[in-house]
Image (cartoon, rainbow, N blue to C red; front, top):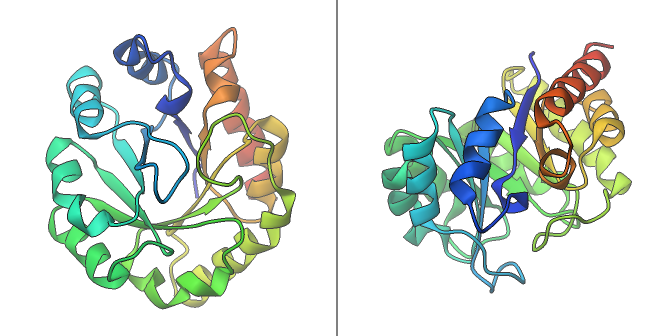
Length: 224
């Protein structure tokens, strides 16, 4: 399995998000990650469908959209229509999660399920056959720049083991929060193959070199 690196637009300059999207593409990111928060499910209000539509016009990268919102079922059509190619919802959200994941696939996007740091891995097992990716949050949703939570590593291993038991070695196991070259290697060694990085990439003097270094470090750990 090949490592994927997703720069997170939440860490870009909000005064010029289009430039931030283009920077992620020029740096060699595999997709652009866009966090959507409603101020209810997560204690922040961030980006919305208009930003997704802007990014779709600005770059050719796939758009990975993470809905940290209470009722994602009400908005999946809006975000897929805006250009989301991957749409992640939370197992903790207040909707029929299985039906919402099916609807995302029906609309032509890759469905993904997300779990917060305090949520047991087993919570997502019943819907893993419906998704293309599982996102294990390695910080509490809400704000960028938080410290990586190493206690999530066993959960990453559990998700990867369950994917393998389902005959899904192709299922992407994603991590988001406090990701840098050191923590990415730890996550890769636990079975993660997809890495969302915001502050680490957007504050780098050379994002392209940093993406390359992150990819090489994670790939080496994943292959061990």
